Image 1 (tube, one colour):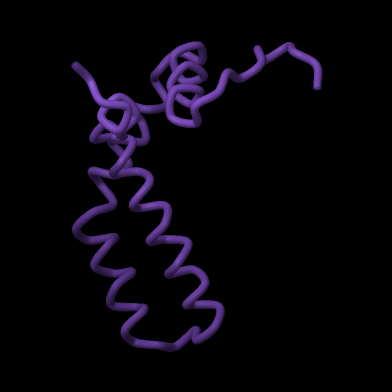
Image 2 (image 1 turned 90 degrees about the vertical axis):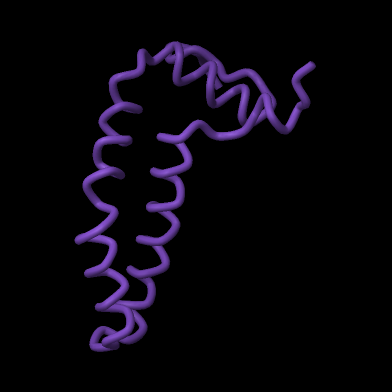
Length: 89
């Protein structure tokens, strides 16, 4: 039997892209607040050197998914049904 948490957990590509997005938003805000902070620069450089390539590969894999599959996945994760692309508000 599948538990609700297991049914809605992120797959590897989704998790990799989500973690990277959160990190990059954090680093972007840190750069705005302190543009010359060497710690922020080092974390950004480490991401670019070590993690960017697999994240970009995961992002490409997600972008190759058909729209219907993406909508179903979003609905599954969000716990509700999305309207079709041509739907009205």
